Length: 221
Image 1 (cartoon, helix red, strand yellow):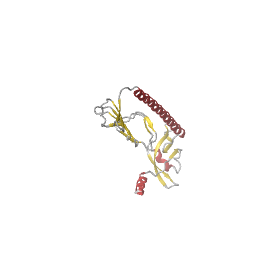
Image 2 (cartoon, one colour):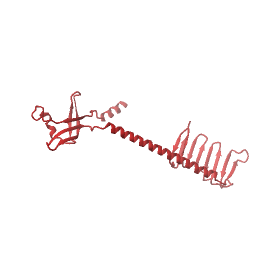
Image 3 (cartoon, rainbow, N blue to C red):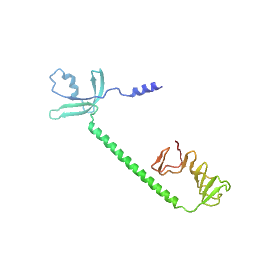
Image 4 (cartoon, rainbow, N blue to C red):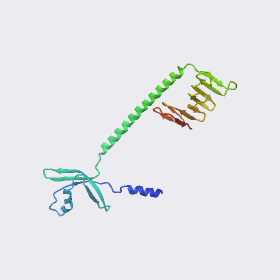
């Protein structure tokens, strides 16, 4: 199957060599070789001609890409046939410019990410340290196995709930037994509505922008 695919791929490739030939015209009308180049007097820019490569004994189709015409003498001075020649210096300069622009772009992006992370940490820190209220409940009362932080002391009526036990830490806005849309489990799974910015080593998760709802990721060694 691999060999068949390879043959199919090679069959679509052009095996003709690229040529670039410049022909200069001289007054050969009175010579015996004139009959061999007479046809060139009628060709025009973008015409396709056949180039015979004698050492390889093959014919190659090529386009006339450049002409030089003397309007006073009313004759062609030269023709350029084949792939247009490129300026190596310009090509290298363009590649260097593109690489430099990419470096600057990445540096700017890195600065934006760093600034966003700093702002996010600042906002989260202000929100957490400035919080007041809430009720801490150890459950069950005897030999407690879980810690609840609730918006009301009555567990059955609480809506905004943080629940922390041996399995992990999670937040629910639908009660103690509700859906935990923000959670970190003991085996390394993270569930979050939004990851605004930051990095997690050992799985190296990074996000520049807020990631949409429903993110699930497993951080591994």
